[in-house]
Length: 374
Image (tube, rainbow, N blue to C red; front, side, top):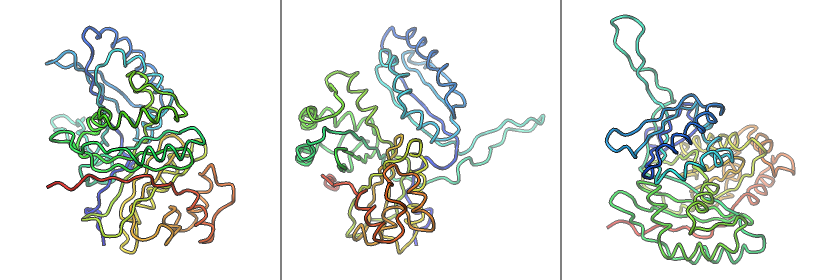
């Protein structure tokens, strides 16, 4: 049986406080403008639910380098704000001041608390999260966008036919896997990167074959964009971002006969995070069950849009309730209450659950992995 220590796992649902670190490199002469923008942002973000505090720091070695740290009650609180249109609007003025940014997010695991007793040293506080998780050095992320109705076949052909970019980005970063799915006119592109995600995304965007694909897609997109304009490109990819909020996988080599699937879950207004949490909880248990066909699961969520990526052995519908994420008492009823598309009542039989599963399954367009390293 897979033990907890053997699992590969990441999660936004640990219940720990979150520390966000934003590294910024300013344009020459932009410091005063940046400080004005920051003051405006600071006043706005202080009223966001879940925000605790933030700090602004300037490098003593390179004054053009700045650091913003913020603390949040939990990762879900931060992600809800990060994915909002309010956040997109708030950070717009920052782009005129900043040459480059990098955002890092950490669960607070321990903290040193100063003792109030005279003469007693400071001591480490309790673990804030349930337990440390074991990673695999891979960052998972997805992008999603919609195309004009009627263009789905053309878009699928374009996405399936492009030439993959070089996997090696630099000595520390490498593209590991890219999976493309469609559900109706919605496209989801999931990527796995060893190393620096931002460096990998920039590397991919600069490749001629990828630029040609993006240019070919432009006429079919519902949301206009101009990737030659940094502001337009930044806005498009900010709105297209679909963060991974939970990942769990059994340890060790991948078994034979594993296939990748994606399921689409449109949540009711305000229910996206609860839906993602429900699916993540089931998959935590499933990966630890030796009888389960699920080898790994990644849940992506933005607002009320949830995608669940599954690597599993055998057919998707061999255990339809498990594949849909509702195996166990009352889970189907809970899922039905959270789904925007649940208009046919609560699925109770295997046949009804299989029908739900077929409606949720996304069409696989391409799933590419570079050759193994020599």
